[in-house]
Image (tube, rainbow, N blue to C red; front, side, top):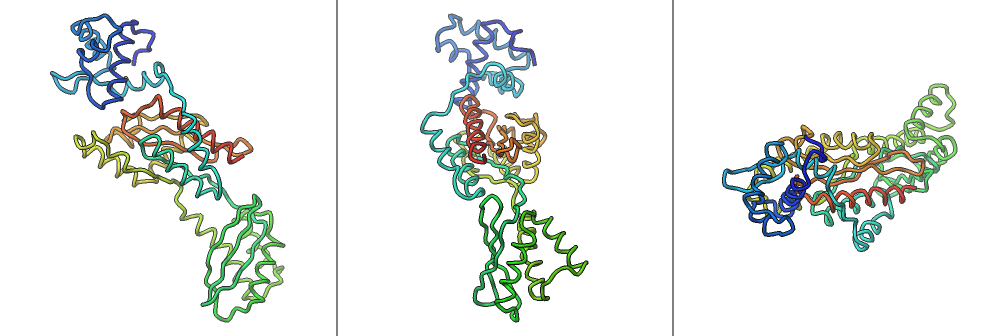
Length: 343
């Protein structure tokens, strides 16, 4: 694509009006429409000549011979990178986003993706931070029917509960013994580290636990490890926003996009590149092979923990004609909000 500096002032004006008109309506923009907007002092014929030149440069395309013009993916990229005038989130939008950053991590991330979806009219996505809970305290609370609640308190103060099946012959003393062993001997370790130490101490005969309590310790540690392995790495909310007023004319594209979103693993890998970049990433249409068929865009920004490490990614998925000037700053503000909360 040519740099924006290669375009004349007249071409830049016409190009901006075509792109903004298309992003607003989803329809090709004609020369008469541009002329009626005023400010150019050009006839429709002169505007058509400029549009033709922009088309030859690969920035605009005509879907039909008699239709107006619409930006190509390359044209959208030029607009986003060099010409877009960003619109910062309003006070109400900021407040709505900030209100979600509270409570347990995953609940806050679900709520954040939901509100971002509603504000942007796209599907909201959040890549959950990779985290290994560090043990501070562990206990078993007996229930009826051969079950107990395993309670894990993390070093960061987080509390998580899981229901675990226990053998019928296990006495209450074994539950207390197992919990006390984990809290005393394994505190300060991540779950994989705790499991490795348990295996090592058993092998060296240093575990002063009876068989029942030893089994409970292993069962409790494994419960969180198995849960973490199957926990979705990505949260998606608001897929229904993708079926907008223009979707009826392109149902196959929408179906393809929804199929791509269902393949969360593929999109999660795409978002990993935003995690690695440590900065906002914008993928437009076929710039990424995953969206080559659906012609969709992804706007994603990483968020950080108190140490400045990238721990996750937040963003939106939508059609290529989404309102970049409004949505890009909104995603960036959401990432900044999550960073402040994680700190």
